[in-house]
Length: 144
Image 1 (cartoon, rainbow, N blue to C red):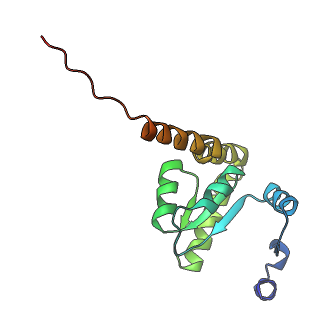
Image 2 (cartoon, one colour):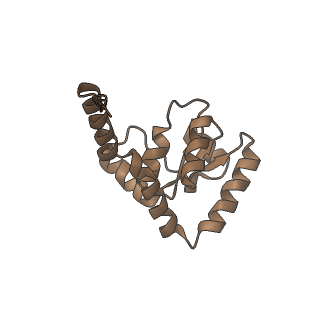
């Protein structure tokens, strides 16, 4: 259905569909891509956008709270409206603005995703568990 739609719209040569890709196919596709599109109506956190940024891609995202927060914090994702023509116009404007800065934007996306990496997240969980298991003792009162 998607392949037929791309063909009908005249964009089939610019669209790659990867049904049930393995890790190698995903890695190769992400290495060739510049953008990741996630136009969800609901996301609890926005992990797909973080994953895209960790690969150096610019996420094109719907205007929902987790995505808007990520865009405000990192300056990387492009938030687009639901109206297709308006969204396409914004994407094209952003693409033209970034075309000579792609390497810098890719690096910025990867830096912005770093706080969400497993190394960072696991460390925060371990610290939280340590605080729960070994709560700080109240300071002893000193008599004057």
